[in-house]
Structure formats: C-alpha cells, structure tokens
Image (cartoon, rainbow, N blue to C red; front, side, top):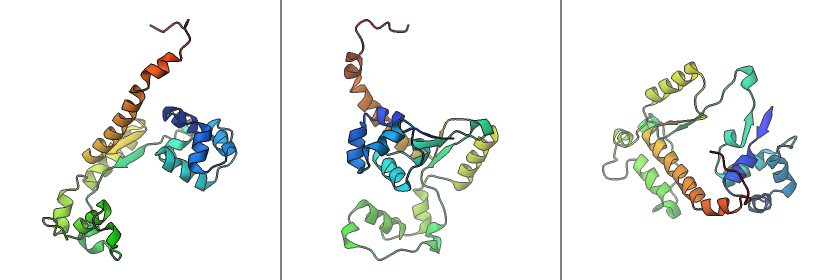
Length: 192
C-alpha cells in the first residue's frame, strides 16, 4: 500500500492546501487528495512539483507500506564521493559566459583543473571527503543490521548540510512557539 505523507510535510512547513496549489499550479482537488491520502493515482509531474516546492525527496512524500513484507527503507544521503570521474572520464560541454562567475561555473573550472591549486584530479579529490569504499561498507552494515533511522548521512559534508537545513527548520518552528500555544483551549489539561 502506498501512503501519502503530504499532510505531515505541509503541516510541518505551515503550508495550506490553497497556497500549495497556487505555488505549484496544481488543482486544489489534487492537493486535497494527497493531503487526505485519498488519491487513487498521481501524475509524475505532480510528484515532481511537490518534491521541488516542499524540498523533500520522493521517499518522504510517499511511502510504500512494506513492513508486513519485511521490507524497510533507508534514504542514503551522501556528500561528495571520491571517484575517477575527473581522471579522464569527465566530458564537459561548452562553457557559457553567463555561468562563468556563478558557483556552477567556478565548480566546473575547479573540476577541470583551471583554478590555482586544483590543477589535477588528485588535487580536486583531496577536497572531496567521501571515501567510496567506506560509504559502501556502511551501507552494507546497515542492511545487515536491519532497521535504523530513515535517513543515513554519509560524509561530514552531508552531515553539516543536513544539520544546517534542520536547524533552519527548527528555528522557524521556535519562532512560532508563542503563536502555536496561543491557540490552545483555555481549559486544556497539559500532560505531565
């Protein structure tokens, strides 16, 4: 059974159905069906738009309830991985002037060895933290162990990027704490 987690994501990000429909260009009925998990089928472009706007992977947006079959899911989120991609295997298109000073252009020039200190694939690989053998071993260990958290960050660069994104989300939530509490009923009994 495929389950939609659009409701949880929208609630967490403080999105409304009408707002999400307007931002994605989707029909409100489409968003509502995913929110209430009543959709019978979903167009791939719909999933693409939602993933982009909500900044989530497809594995967060929808999930296959496979536990009864002994199937578990892990989202592997690696950072940079050292490969022989630059060792003669890379093929580059024609550079575009508009990207020359942009991050993408600078990164491409660094990969091509056109920046001082980055004139060989080896020099470039020294700034990439991920060891492919270690990463593969951790994935195998996770599979053999079974279970574990949904997400698996591999590489210190991935850890820092994910942590920064989560801290931003936590800060946005904390900024709304007073608002959230202000809507509690006056006679509510708080759990101890």
